[in-house]
Length: 76
Image (tube, rainbow, N blue to C red; front, side, top):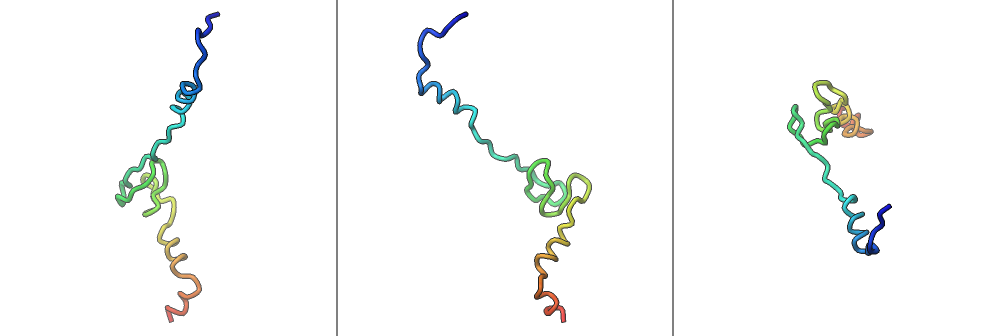
């Protein structure tokens, strides 16, 4: 069985291993419905759609976070 002629240096070893650790940026695409930036294969956080169907009711979520305890007094 063939063997290496020389010892592989520490620098060459770490350089070879470091090539697999590269971090890539996430793939960001625009939502076809509202044109907001979103991650590929994820629900759009702006409109709540994934493809052609609504998955999250974003308007209800905004009302719940904006309202709170002070919303009853503001409506009267």
